[in-house]
Length: 234
Image (cartoon, rainbow, N blue to C red; front, side, top):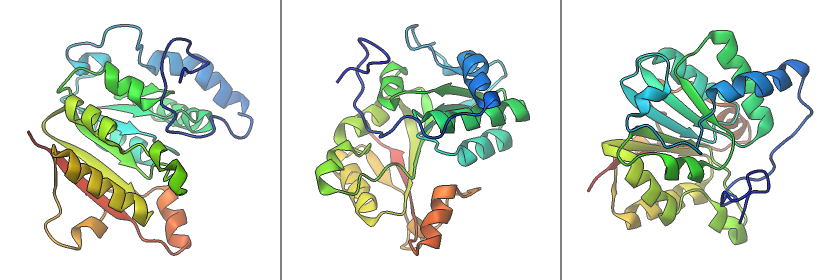
């Protein structure tokens, strides 16, 4: 369907509501003033080298789809200043929170997009991204909504196109059906190698993992999480 906020640009609606509580004055100002300086311009051609998107030297590119509260993205950007991060999040309140943290910390290695991640994936040059993070995505738990899950053969093909040879796709979720769904879809795609070497690997957080509020909520509610790493092959 067409996104009413961006006439003519298709969106595949993998996300739900766009806005929650009213923004505080500082948050609204951040979206109006700061976000435009950080936002990807998809109406312009993507640079052949994505490193050119950043005002500081970076040696690799990492894409996080649906960063939620932004805990993971901020943590990674602060600990890896040599990595350029592209964060995508359509939920206005989450974007406002992240923009504020980027400003407070003075991070220069983050670029953002506040709409459908498929638009970014289709804009990115082939073989341009080192790693893609999809962490606690909306599980769309009702079977009739499973078609809206972000992991699909179409989106895995998008991942495969934009990842560099040997690039990584990392997925985390506390929903068993979505974990199994992702394993099956990656197996059926054929372009991703699951990197688990033993049964404990998929229950072990990624190296340097800071945790997220979604993960903390899952644990409070008695659900464990799975952490899946796939390497692009072929």
